[in-house]
Length: 472
Image (cartoon, rainbow, N blue to C red; front, side, top):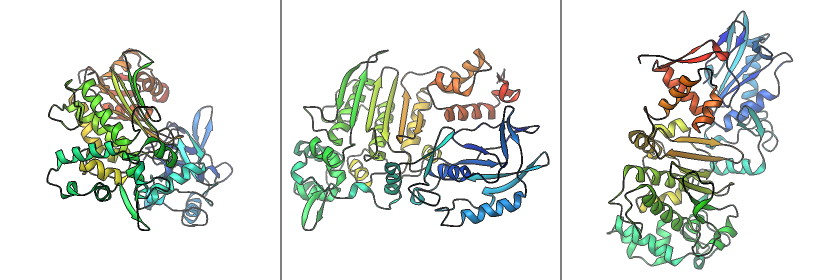
C-alpha cells in the first residue's frame, strides 16, 4: 500500500486513486466508510485518519484516543449490518505516531470479485467506487455488473431468451468449423451434426427439451438483429486512420450492412487487418494460415482476444479497436477481474466469458495459462516499443490497452521520461502523463523504477524538482 512521507508536521503524500486523507477534528467522518467501499470495489488504497487539509498541505492533526478509535473501527468492520464484508486483516488497520501525535492508517485491499459489491449498510445507497481523487456512488447498472462478476457461473453460458437456432449465421459457423479443423483435424466433434457441434463447443444448450443458443453462441455466431435484441449494449467497432488524420479511412461497425455483426466475423476481420497493417503483408483470406505471423502480429492478436474474452457485454461502450500508423488501441467494457499487476505477472486467468474462452481456445486463439498480458508486455519491450499502456477507467467501466507501433529511443518509455525531466526538471506527474499519453499511475510506476535503479532522484519534496543522475 502507500508509504507515508513526512516533512515536519506535513504529510507529503497527495490524494490520488490509491490514497485518501481524513480529518478527525469532528470524530470519525462518514466519508471514511465511503472511501473504504470505494477502494475495496476498485484497486485498493490507503486511508489515513488524522490529517487536516490546510493551505500548507496535509497537516498532522492526530487522533485522540487512537487505540480506542481503532478498536471501534474494527467493531464496525466486523458488523455485517454496517459493512457488508471486512477485507482487512492484522496490521491493515493500525496506529502510527508522528511528531507526538497519533494517526490511524487503514490499508484497504481490492476485494475479490466474489465479495463485491462491498457496501455500507445498504447495497443500493452504500456502494461506492474510486475515480481519480474522489469516491462516487454506484448506480444500479454498476452494482448489477459487480453481482454478475461475483457469480461463480459465467453469464455467457446462459441460454438466450429471445433468439433461436435459426438466428445463428450458417456461414460463420462453417468458417469456425474450418478453423477448428485446421487446429484439431482429428477431433470427433467435427464429425457431428451442426446442432450437436454447437452444443459440444458451448454455443447451444438444451433447455426444457429445446436446443437454444447460449448467450456466447449468440454473440459468436448470431445475426446482428438477434444479438442487439438480446443484448442492447452489444457493439463492435473497428477503425483505421491515416497518419495524423482524425477521420477513419476504414470502419467495420455493428448494425451496418453487408456483414453478420457477430464476434467471430469481427474477430477474423480484425486479426486479418492486423496482419495487413503491421505484419508481413501477406493476405490471410480464410483466417487460418498463421505461418507468416510476426511477434508484433501475435501480440496485437492477443490483445484483441483479451478484449473479446474479458468484455462485459452488458456494460457500456462496446469493443473499440483503433489502428493508426503509430499506435494500436483496444478498448472493452468492464474492468479487470484480477489486479492489473497480477495480470502483468502472468500465471492467473479469470476470463469474464468462459464459454467464449472455450470457443476461442478450440481454434487456438486463447491463452490457457494466464500468460496473455505478460506475453504482450515482453513482446512489445523486446521489439523496442516500450511497455503497453494498460488503463482501467470507471464510469463507464473500461479497460484500454495502447501499443506504440514505432520503436522509441533509449529503452522506450523510460527514455522518454528521462528526456522530459532533462528538459524540465520541475515537470509534474500530470504533465508527464499528458506528454506520454499514459495514466498518472503508469508515470508513478516508471519514476519508481527509475528511482530504484538510481537513474533519477527527487530534490526538495513536492515543490522541488527531478534530477537525472549522470553516469548511470
